[in-house]
Image (cartoon, rainbow, N blue to C red; front, side):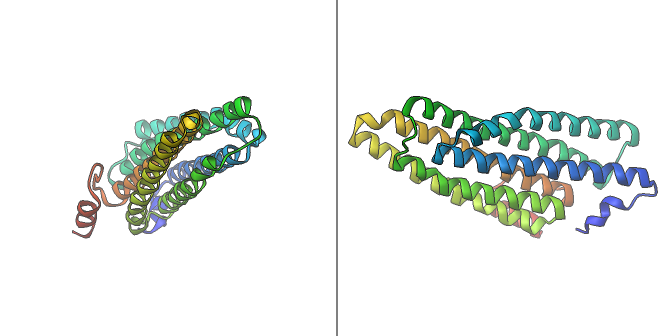
Length: 239
């Protein structure tokens, strides 16, 4: 879909309102993406300054969600939008909720990094590096989801949802590795549980990135594709 559709209204002020909301979502997305990056690095490198940055940004992300939600509510009441405009605003409200949840998961990872630093010091065993690849996968998904949102690109949104299966496989692999290590040496239980909880947070971030792609599809196509399988989604879009 042409991104200029957002600016097609007779009222130039209405165009500005919608464009401001769109830009605010992308700004929020960029902050959350950076939170994930810093959280993962703080976990693997024991950099507590990075972890603190993630935690400090959480309140700002929460405020952005409220501000964007309020802006959408005001437009809904004042403009009484229909068709694409209505879907845009509903999709934005859903998207910022997912972004806020992603920020929460990044904050959990940062808090875990601080906890580990307090209990284990600066040493990091190889288990902690297992999550780096998973973090890179979910960051790629989120980046792609935000790009699809920015360009109103359904094809990109559909392709990003396919990457969730890769994230799930990586998460499953980490679970198997961690369980095996706990069985080999019970002294590894605490350490491997930390990795498992962090991997779980990253897997949830991938799920939220998928949700954002579904919101993009709804916004552009008017089709609610939530809870559909990959095959059902593709048939729905192509049909």
